[in-house]
Amino acid sequence: MRYFILLIWVLIVTKSFGQITSEIDFPTFPLKKVICSCQSNPNQDYSTEDLSYYEDGKLKQVFKTYTKEESDTNIVEYYYSTIGLLDSLKTKTFVGAKGYDDVFQRTRIFKYNAKGLLIHSGFADEKGNNLTNDYQYSTEDQLLRKIVRCGSNMQIYSYEYDKSGKVLKEFKNDRLLNRFKYNKENTLEKKVSYSNARYNLRRFYDRITHLRFKNEFRAKYITKYEYDEQNRLVKVINQENVIEIRKYENGTLIEKRTNYYGTDPCFAPCCSQYIYRYEYDEIK
Image 1 (cartoon, rainbow, N blue to C red):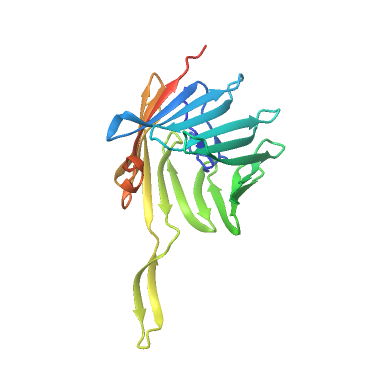
Image 2 (cartoon, helix red, strand yellow):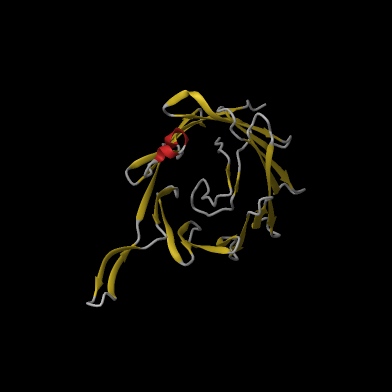
């Protein structure tokens, strides 16, 4: 049985990676704690997430604390409709955990169609930030477009599928963003991502310095996914760098290591080299 860490507000690909789903995804009971530490100091916790559930097993609250003094504390609370769909989630950030002097709050709401498919989500917080996502589906209930609005800015994501319903391409404002390739088990094997920016390779000018011709290219990034004999994700490779490794025990995810290879990853805590450990309640 698989249990997944909290992933909120991100458009994700499902376990089979064959279908684009909504941004709502949360752990399955009985995951009770996620402990994060730096790879350089694995015995010292960097942060801890404690999870609690309603009696029916739905996620109720995630309480995240940091071991560093004066760090923020984050609390996310989940509320559901009478038919069990996520209705809203409330995020509270206590700035300076010891004193709780400043509290930043944000509520995100979710709306669905008659089939239970997510059609709208959004928030507007006390600082004037706002973000909304609207979803449009085909007659086969496949996500065709996601429209993201942030203030006056708008981005449109669209998707193409194969005959079996697996997503093949993702576009952003009609420009190719990601291509997906699958293995024989219909599990994601490779993702090819393209940068939004165009880079000028060469420029040619006439005598009065007017641009006459230029060659352009878009940077391309390849992400590969490796699985074990039980078709569980065990490794993610971006370009030639291993960016994620997962370890299982008795069929359950117990550890994940992530690595970031940026220009200077040490601007981030732990130099962006994290270890996540997962603890579970016993199933009664």
